[in-house]
Image 1 (cartoon, one colour):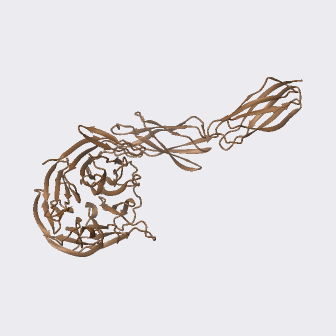
Image 2: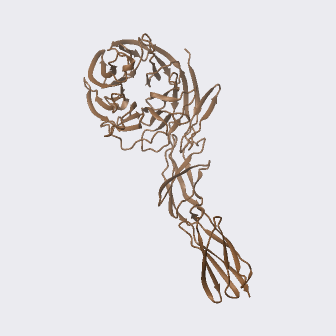
Image 3: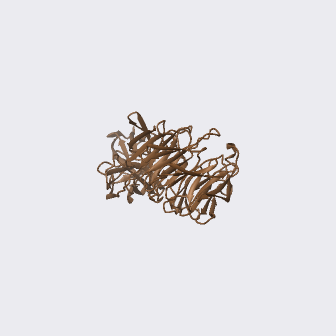
Length: 585
C-alpha cells in the first residue's frame, strides 16, 4: 500500500512581519510561516499526501491510534467512496470501501465502532479488525450525511433532494440509529446542517445550520440526547436588527469540559459561546490574522489547546494552535501552508485532536480543492515559567521629546533555551493615550532594549509584556514611568569684535534644536545693553534653515551687548545667547 510521508522538526519563527521559510528535506520541502510577537518552540510535524481527490469527514480513534478520513467519490452515481485508515505516524494501514459515496464519519463512545454515512445506509465497522459489521438501511441521501454519536445513539442528517444542485437549500432532517433501529426525529432545517457531539458534550448534540439563499440568518441549536427522543435546548441566531451579521458556519467544537462551544464562522472568525445558553463567552479569542477566513476549529481532549484553521493566501497563517483558555495571552503557534507539498489551506471540518492532546490532525487542500494532505502535529507538551528580573531602566538619564529613549530590562526563562530569541511587546501610555511600540528582541543573556521616540512632554509610562509561547507561560507585565522634558534648543551668534557707531553693525546667527523640527515663522527677541541702559530692539525672523541677521546702529560708543532669545514652544525649550561689540566713533 503506497503512501507518501514526510517527517520534520520545524521551528516556526514568530516575527512582526510574516516570512515564508522553505525547509529542504531531501527531495521534499515544507513552507512554514512566521507570526507576530514571540518565538514558538519546536513542534514535530508529519505530512502525508493522501491518495484522494475529494474529502467529507475525519475522525480520530485515540485508543487504537488510528485516523479515519472519508473520500466521498461522488462524481458518478455508481461511484463508491472509501475511508482511508492512517496511523498516528502518518502511515496508511487500511482502506474501507463503501457501497456508495461516503459522506460522514462518527465513532461510538467506546471507540469500538466506526460509523460511515452512505447514500442508502449507515455502515458500521469494527475498529479493531477494520471489518464491516453491518449496514443499517436509511432514507436515501444524495447530498451527503453529517454523522455524530451522542447519548448512545448514532445521529445523522438526511436531505430531501433529488439533485446535487438542490442540496444547498433543501430541507435536511435529523435522524438517529440505536441498536440497529432507524428513527426519524422530525427535527429539520432549510439547508445543510453540521453536527457536533464532542467528548465534553455529555449527552448533548449541537446542530448548526449552514447559510444558504433561503436561510441568511442561520441558527445554532443544542439537543439533549439522554432520552429516547432528542429534546431541543437553547437556540441562537446572530444577525442584527438590520439582518447583518448572520452566521456563516464552517465548523463546531465542544471544549473538553463541555462548557464552551467554538464556532468557525467564515464571516466573523472564531466565535466562543457558552455551551449551555449559546451566548457569547465572557472572553473571546483574538481575531484571526488579517486575510484569514475561518474554516475549522477543534479543542484538544485534555483541555489544553484549541486549534483554529483558516483559508489564507501567501504567508498569512492557515492554522493557529494556542491555549484553550482565551484569557491566556500566549502567542499562538502559527502555520502557513503554501505550496504543492503541503496544500494551501485547512479544509472545513479539517481539524481533530487525539484524546490526550499530544497530536493535532489537520487536513489541507490545494487551491483547486482536488488534492489533500494530512498533517500530524505534536505541540510541545511542557510549559515553563518566565519572568522579568532586575527592574527596568531608561537611557538617556533625561528623556526629551522627539529623541530616542531606550527602556532596558532582562527576561528570565525557565526550561530549555529557545533556538531563536523571543520578543518583548511594549506600549507607551501618555496624555494622548496608549500606543503600541515595536517589539524588541531578547538577547541570549535575556537582556533587551525597547526603543521609542516620545511624542509629547510629560510623563510616559512604558508597559512591557512577554506573551509566552507554547513552551513558556506569559510573564507578569512590568512598567516604568519616564519624565519627558522639552527638547533643548540653542542659539549661536557671530558678531564683529569692533564696529563703527556711524556705520553700524551686523550680527548673524543660527537657531538649532533637538527633537521635532522647529516650526516655520519663528521670531527672536533682541535686547541691546549699553551705558545708557537696556532696550528692546525689533524682533528678528528666523529663516527656514534656522539662520537670522541682526542689523543695528549703536547709540553710544564703548561696550554694547546684544542678547538674543528664543521663547520656545510646546516641545522645545527656550534658549538665549549674547554677543558683545566694542563700538568706536
